[in-house]
Image (cartoon, rainbow over all chains, first blue to last red; front, side, top):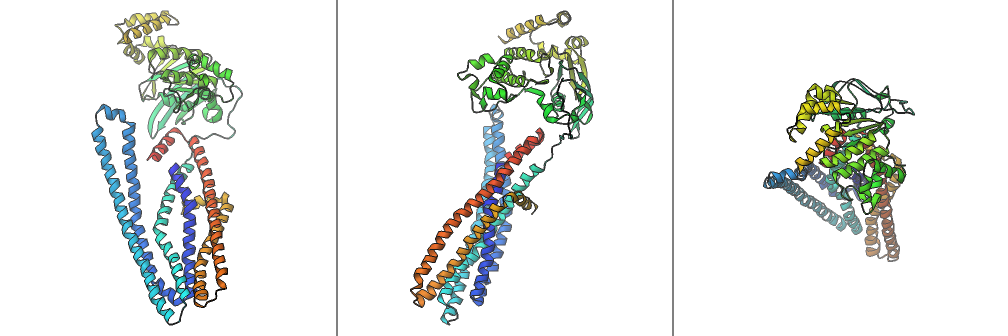
Length: 489
Length: 116
């Protein structure tokens, strides 16, 4: 973006004045020369069509070459960028030599194109200088004899010489100007393409913006297609306000798409989505998104203080509210252990935090927003089991009296949900709470089995029986935690 | 041509700056166009015809032209730069605002495009 905007700026700041001055110089000088002495002017100008032809020819040759150079530089950038982004893979497969050879190949093409462009430019300027010199020779030859015959004065030849360069310069600049204009047009096209891109998500006039937000979510036969491919189909579920719903399924089953539809990052293709009984398309986008907080797997913290990052959820919150949110997210303790406390700079240019610490700051950021709907998108999958336990405890506290969507791979994250939806290829294939799904012995049961099979030779029938008996399942939680720790140690 | 038309439409807000810059530029070009003519007078009238009394006047004119040229160059450069920067400021803000309104996939496509 910066390069394209700079291209436009150069056109406005330099291209326009240079174009303007060359036009004035060319025609202005030609008129002055004709007024001073029409015969000498015409004789001197006899070479100028040839100069214009050479400049035109040069432009025809050099423009495609510059275009090839730009494409090759893109290929070179891609090679370098892929290598940097995939450095772990490169090193893991010991493919450094291959990558170096690949880069050298692209680099050589780039070098050859530049040499080719230099060869064209290099042959153009001597020809132009020769033709310009010819003009001077004609001027002195014809002008000198005219001075001798008293037809013109010595001063006229001096003035003619001065004006001659003003006439030749615009023609010499022709190639440069057209190339710059072409580059500016390309930059302008890219910039205006973005400005013209319409948002697919439109807000209706006088959108729904009630005083109260309950957080009741209903999907009625919802389908979603992306690039002609069905992502979700026939989704039917109801989430009463304040309840917790978990969505599980393999990668690509459509879990995150459900969340994207609730946030209205995309619009459903079929069916109806209701929030508090009102079609999601009728809601004010700003209001809807202000009532939803999301904690993602990949936590992003801005280069700002911890307080600044938490305040991102509610910019007008007080320090007390920030501390309260941090306490609820179980982050206050480790924040206070930092030398600058809440004023510690984090993010790209700040202190490095562990995955669990970043996640808890993100939870605090979501809590301070006091959202009607809380979405946790696989937010504990990238942390170790001990951290997961700490985060889970923090989440349990904030989920209370709030509609919560949990997307997770780990059974331990969803076990307490009021309803668990199992997705497969964008469809709900199983639904129910933990106990119900365990007793069904289907996909969820298999997933539980798979996740815990390495821990011990557990008697799963016995565990299912325990599940039914223990309301809070705390025994099972402790059992799994202990077994996991044993396994880790 | 449509692209240039749009660029100019975008900069229409700063028309005054642009027109003044073009006037300054025209003045600068005019001074440059006058200079060889003064050289002609010096050669023909002062050197050849011996009208020495003209020399101080012509030299003053040349000096004044050089001075005006310097000032004009500065003002013109400043005005064109200010004009381009003002347009760029608006374009950059509009682009950023537009990017905020785009959905994820379009932003990802554009980001990849610009990286290349």
